[in-house]
Length: 392
Ligand SMILES: *Cc1c(COP(=O)(O)O)cnc(C)c1O
Image (cartoon, rainbow, N blue to C red):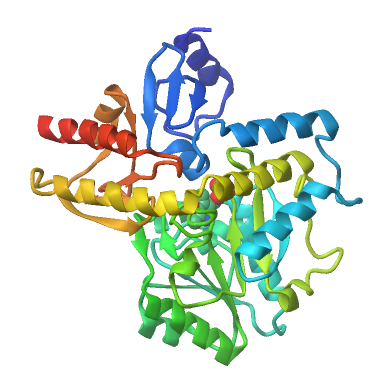
């Protein structure tokens, strides 16, 4: 099919709920993508942070190929080895919690919110979340997402949510009534523009949750599984949450989500309280196991930390040349370039020159390469970005 024929199918049969670029992608390998017209693209935002190991990571491809010939799916009526193994690998890399598996980030957050309600007294029904956050598009998670643009057309939302400015400890204290069941926050706001939580803010959440008997939930859907140079974003801070949620990079490209909770809290989730038909299915969990093993074997946490530092330095150096760059922020390979003007055109021009990046909140370029990225690829990407900025 030609590019136009494929786009024609979308125009006729696919709901137009995304603003898509007019390219059809047909192949991916590592940091590179190919479109149907044979163009090769350096992908520095693969899969919106899903393809954390790059496109088609060989270990994941091999594991999925093997698993698909043995058992694609088995329902949770039974036990299955990949699900158990993945839970163990995740537990060992976080705070020793227990896992519930689902299929997306929003579902992982839904599970966390429900569990927080279940494991706290009945009168605790409120949730505190932060302005600029992003937690998903289901009714509870879009309510948790404290951005008016995502709420338009969906009022009234779920009751019981209080929104505070990110990193505002005074506002947190003021909102923390006895009815609060949980605080849900990203350690680094991703969609919101790569804003890093302050250690004091996360510690204040921990302290207040302990004092009031509420649950501290960290949304690690974007920060989790290595992107920041540690397994989970919270590990850069001196805090331990009660629940973390993850998805995106967890399956190396295969759809999977997970919620991990401390064992005492996890015990509230008894049969009948929550479930997911596809959750924990063999294929997704085999992909998850292979993803974790690939990160270990490739020493990719260290690589993410080192390449993140290298990329941030190179991008910061561009500030001298281009006044449109205000500053660069982030941890590891979660990098935001704050512009002084809109960035959508820059993203489009970069794509024409074979570089894929992303722009969020109008003026923040997200530069989030996979953990396998090399210095040469970063140099190439920064070079293209530089040349596009030079064109003005
Ligand atoms: C992407 C994202 C989500 C939503 O994940 P889906 O898989 O799209 O439901 C939730 N939280 C954060 C922090 C995200 O980046």
